[in-house]
Length: 104
Image (cartoon, rainbow, N blue to C red; front, side, top):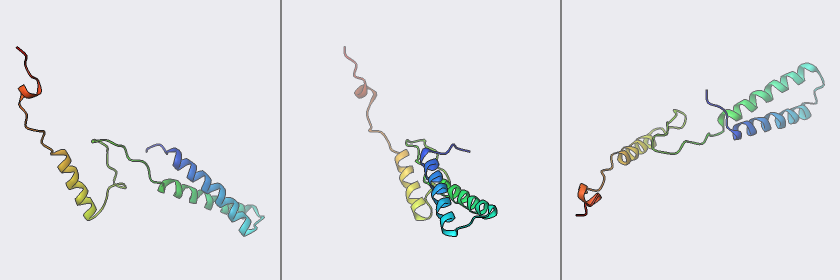
């Protein structure tokens, strides 16, 4: 399992804190069971937010594409066609002597 990014930790933690305070103030509960239920709900909400924060993609030719980050439908076919065209580029037709001239 990949490590969470700083943004995921920050958004998740902020969500837990803010939602716990908001739900406690709105519900005006004073029982231990009510506080436990609200805390569990806030923790679940914070986890959901942390997992849905978009993770930055690795740049480069050989970056791994995740299933969650892969486009779907016609966007997937357009992206795969563009990627195939980029990978299948043919270098300029040069001869070895043009690339490395030999001086006599």
